Image (cartoon, rainbow over all chains, first blue to last red; front, side, top):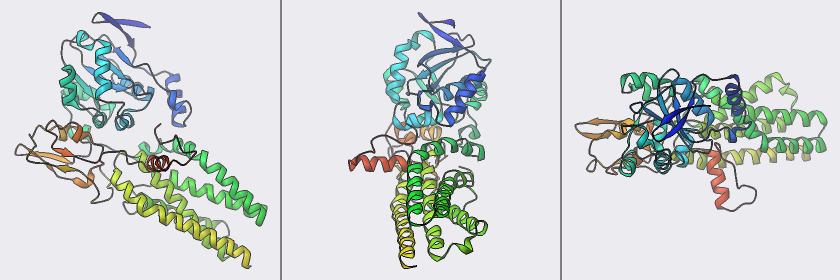
Length: 331
Length: 97
């Protein structure tokens, strides 16, 4: 570890190049492995050889955030102030308040930043503004907060121009942005979904046959996958604004494909109705759940969707169960 | 956000123009370009794009902005409800830890 003089103390000097281990760690975190412990110690770091005039960039201590920022600033002389967000990214930590005014002021004091730099200007990510109050920071420690860009990749251009262009301030949510969010969602869903699938399998095995049980279990897993992966990936293509509706439509298409490709004509009325009621409800729930991963859905909107959507999903599941049980008893 | 619009008419964002000092912080912090400063006052130009993150209200020096801020996360809300109802087995969870 190399150190750089920082005021009366010193700060670790960090590189801007990511190693294989950094990439591997990020990859694992995307799959939920060691994600909650993927963090760096908070504090002041030196990128290059910053002096007292060098800009101060602030980020979270989620290692993926820290890595993306230091890679973007590779080859420059910048102070990097890392806040303690307990390994959570800037956006989520701002929502929780850990990327917040209190932590920022505390970290400035702890690191003696006022002695390290002669200016009084901090550069924060725009998505951190949900947790930080710029005028309170100024009141409490004299530092001026500038919210720079949404993406770390735009930081070099921001530093060069001293201001952000409208494009740098705008959120985007392209296909790849959504794709990288899917693995961890699949892993998180596995915990409740796998026991339920096992239960469906056992019940179907008990009252029907091994074939029916396997088909029912696979159909359910497919509906979950449709809601978690297909719905979010096709988000702008699915009609409507409601995530529940988008998910339900993806689920109906999934059911229709299943019906066409898996011998739907031989399913019988009860199973067919059960499928078309239950599976879209499952997909709908999981696509609605994806609102937590987006940066354009509002709390009021999600509340409204849940108030209207959850009873419909529950009713569809109940009706499917009733039809399938009635079909078993009557036939 | 380009290509994405969420539900209309639900955002709880309120701007008290009388209090506004036209500093432009709201324009700076809003990642959905909800505001514009016109004639030394902020105006809400696209309320339905608001995701209620609360950044504008938190960064508004004269407290001219109000919004019922929070994370629009379905599983988080369900966990919250279950926790409020004190159902066992639903203590942790949430999407981003």
